[in-house]
Image (cartoon, rainbow, N blue to C red; front, side):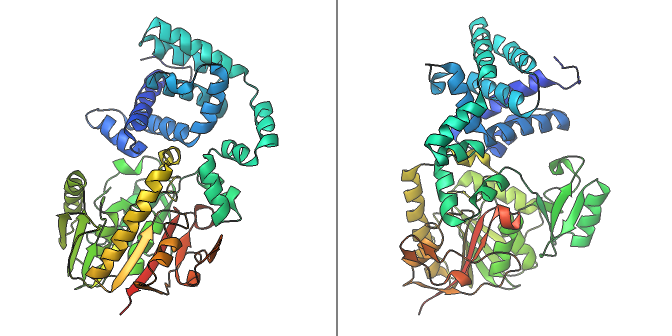
Length: 449
């Protein structure tokens, strides 16, 4: 195993990271899913896993900027035509040069050694491209772009695609702060009160080197620092789960009580389902619906591990599922524009056609919710107006918007272009740059008589 002078296992780490990035790109899955799948049958030290994780996430965060440099280094050749593994190896090399303070010759040498395993020709190609990349005058190139297109300049400066910058500009005047906040992840843990008290979980994690601070929800803690990855600690996904505060506030908005019958209409991977089960003290019933057999099977194993006993799992289309319940939670499939700090690959997958399809699906699922219960919480991990306030405007003949009283959050968007949402004070938005959470929209609705 090759090492650098600092003793780090760089070449294996780079190679694995490039392979994982290739999986993310080719299969349109999240980095977390790709890493989980890649490491499934591998017995690697947590430090190597951590290093791979860092490379994958940091490269994904900055992909447009890295590609901007590589496109200039490639000259006439299109970056998309490059072998996917080599393309991601090149991205890692440029990332090392610009963001890890690794001398360019050393970053190039490491990438070339790995490329040589593909072929001598691949090694020569990687060497030539990275040497050209070293010569790119990034400051001058960016200044030229700034003169022509402010939005493109901002997209490169803050590592977001232009479509995302356009959305950010529309939803908040502090859009640059939002883009910056999207680049740093804040972890939260929720105590699984079915098995342990919040105090017990706090002490358990503290003994394992985790520094926590309280949040407005007594069962949720913000992670300040940790010595080892939370996923390898005693009690992970049993006594505590990793769940963003904004996500936890969705269950708080529904406020299910012991004895209630609740339908969770888009339930996988089950974090909110298990939170509601804990709030209900395993009494009453939660009917958890998802249209993927694979996700439901994973969720079944997870809920059992968490001690959840009042959930009935159903494989079904949430837009067509029929049931009679007291309450419905619809945390709808969405563009995930609020989750890019946790899932950076989301930034590079936007499709206007798919976005319109999501809007139609959300409205069908919302309309179906009104047939199941009179009390509905609708949420998304999206910052767009269209998926949130816009959908409520579209369905105003079906739902009244009730006032939400949550301990954290900002009002919704009242005016968006020519559209007016006159219930903005009754809904809650959460933003990374304001609340240090994922971007979320939460509303509580009642079916109109």
